[in-house]
Image 1 (cartoon, rainbow, N blue to C red):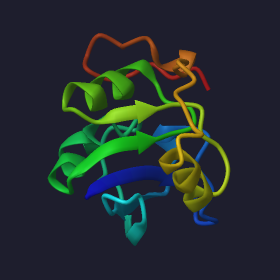
Image 2: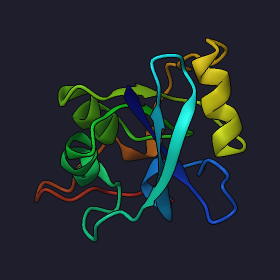
Image 3: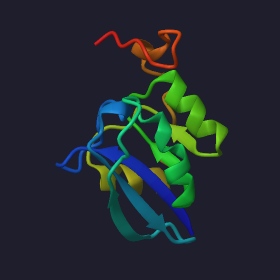
Length: 128
């Protein structure tokens, strides 16, 4: 089994920006790529880019994150703990997971450019 996380809005749409999501859908998937369970998970309070979510997702067994836009820091942190991030995903969360499992979704290779700077005190400088 594997677990896939997707940052979503209340309308089950993939949030265009990982750090602004309302919650995550966490999909439990069988070895035959069948969705067995979907659980909603609220992010913890903290860093606005949600890069602090990596340990929580790891504890849940998540190995893949399907995201729309995501900043470099959150992308790197998720990758550093072994969570593969697939960027450039948009649309209905469940439909995108099904397409990913069918091998029809690949990483766009692009991070959100607004999140490349720090304020020097551990916080981020946002340009939006």
